Image (tube, rainbow, N blue to C red; front, side):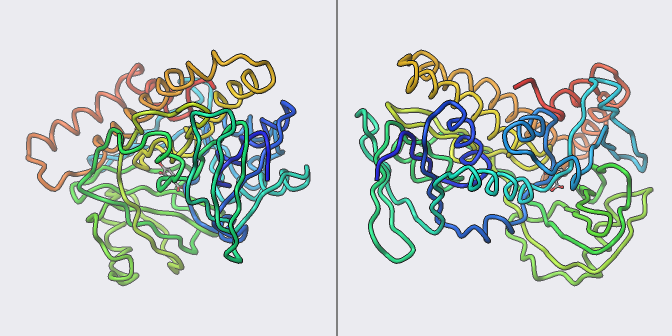
Length: 385
Ligand code: DHB
């Protein structure tokens, strides 16, 4: 088959890109190896920047404002005390707690209603001919047949195990950082333990108290990178969580989902090659502290959609040529913010007493300084798109 833009991956990046391209009069086909049901039910992060929500609202009518909830601040907790970072007061912006899979339901429904061609259950295995004017994606259908999607441009929005990245960067890899811990995440049936999210640095390690709905809560705690999600009992999990938010008391309830999230920082060495580009997790990974992953994917896509419109409608390649540089500026700011929140709040296994006291000094520098708090608020709520 032939289309203007072949998009690999029906996650937030691929779906949003197809919306923006359609507005510019450009047809696309989206391929994803997963089923619609799997995409719509996989639990991912829950915080959307204000600019992300405004954009999703504009393109597909998101339910963030009805199903989600607005948060005008977070609590940083350390030394047994909570300190509120007042986003609204500091930067006049907020974020939305709205689970990614809910945003995906909105995007998929709106795309299908517009007649978008989304091929679920189709696995891309190679992207070819990047340097030509008609690159292609080679894929296998659910029935085992071969599918070739030829296009004027190929976009890899296919996540951290991207096949398009291989065609864009080859074996050049990218910039990596590993962390000596992971997050143990749970979903539980309980009322919220706080009005806003709590990011807690405790002598036993980090915990994050997040939410989903009035009846369901999401919480995480720092664990070993190779922890087994099934090993601890519910009582052990609650004991760990309670100890990690000293001075606060959590409402406990039945735990109905557990998972272990890996921590990695990664940026691909190149984001484009000829008529191919990579966006979102295919291009970069951030550790989850600060919830930048999906928001960064959205920011990549805004820039790429403009560049593709200029190229494929206007015949002007200049925005595509500068895409890597412009996208990278925000990617590295988000890499820094995610690394900074992670390093300030977690306890490294080899942390000395010096490290631990320095970390508390850093946290005090943030909460006791208007300028320090304002940086956190600005980065957390998101830089302008
Ligand atoms: C959530 C995840 C995050 O990484 C974060 O920083 C805040 C909230 C969440 O899943 O609710």
